[in-house]
Image (cartoon, rainbow, N blue to C red; front, side, top):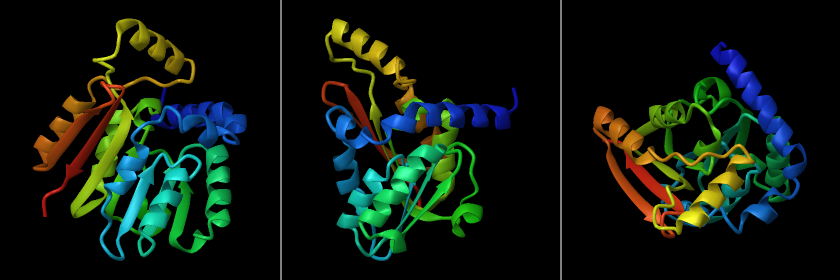
Length: 221
């Protein structure tokens, strides 16, 4: 199967999953997508800076980040047209259309200049998307590729759950699989490899007994 066919297939899958769920997504996910608000608080966007979210979904994270950093400019991409429809409604409702640009694209292979007229961003973040993107390592690389010198990539997602009871860990993983979600158990190793290749630094934290993982990569410069 070609890369284009795989991308098209994943887009259809995500549209199918979220066609109805997008209307209640934020209400239901707030109880178990832990660490998202901490990621936003830690962005520390410079004055007038630029922020890109890969897998922006409903736009919930961008709206909160825009509230916290009102002089920044925000960009978001998602492979699901259904989720982007909700995200655009969110931007309009929050009156931040003028500082937010959204685009339909594959987070693992995109051209930021073609999408947004901009090739580098001060901050890039990925919140609970890597666990739903099959080429997740390529997505990390793509995010790092469009960082400005000295910029940071912020990630939060499901962790290895290594300190949870085995029965709870097994049940959680079965439940996540029903939603096409797979925790990336080798996330830390993948990030360390990218940092080694790029001369970047990594901060990696296991949260809530391993339920979630948080990471920040800082590029040199």
